[in-house]
Length: 439
Image (cartoon, rainbow, N blue to C red; front, side):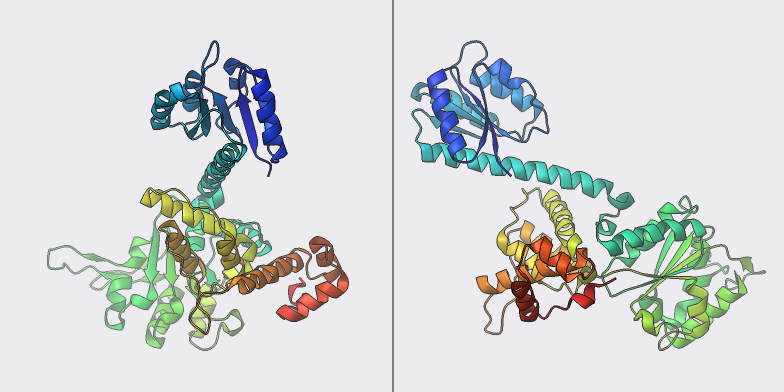
């Protein structure tokens, strides 16, 4: 994107020379002879930077800076000063001005300062947009945002199953965000004002299974009864996370309780009706559901709707935005500025397989926020070289083009502007098959 510079100087000849210098460097220039005129149209979303002389009739450069700083404290303002104005410029710098340059200023020094300011402004605006997008995304679940086809389909399915209030079995590898999906179903459904109870099945002990799930009416050591998870979830949602981790006896017991539609806490005089929406998750391959680790009765009780949650490998086009969300969250927590998205990071995002899914991507973003770069080492123990990074980036561009074109090779060639032979040579080099992307 072309950088935008608003130049303010009452010296017409000097201003014309600076306009020429900036335009020859590829910058877009708006020039003004009066500071009052330069204020017009500047808002918090102004996409450019300000370059202003200090000594001007009427409103001077320092007053202009103060007015701009009140509009947006993050707007870069560079002041051009004479040698006698340096103390004033230093004071402005401490007050938040981006930089000051003493006249006469060389072309290289001027362009270096302006380009730094333009880059800083672009990053500031991008961070603001991403923070707003992260805040607005998917009703508070930004990891469920994204424009990939699989996520658009998932969000549409969430709306339907939330309203239906039936049982839902979420499938997918570890770390894809099944807990967030379950919480989104709860928030979007008619039980949103009722409890959401998250039960980590892989942490349950077989000896205490009934007590944890059903509770007890018998007074405990402090004279209080134990409330079970089913009772906590009454009229709300119970999420059985990693339900396949339950032992076979625990699965059979849970299936019997769910089939009965009521539960008996220990020591209770009567059964209590069960009014919960059941959500569950599993890492079992959807093709093998109903066999293997699942009790058949329990599987059919929980699988009113089977909803696959895609891995990062299935939603690669969403990875950059997810990374930026995690990065900004980490930077906000650490009170650090967001680092620039370098070519190496872009290659990592596009070329890595992310088998750890969202937790792995979040960890990578947090490492970038604190300035650590844990790239994968090759067989010789060294990080990948430029050729490996470029190849990874090229491979993902081709995959993205095929994904967007639904596996149509001719359409993908058009997107990439590649001749047929070059395109198919690259497919062979990277081991990519267009048929894998056909819907």
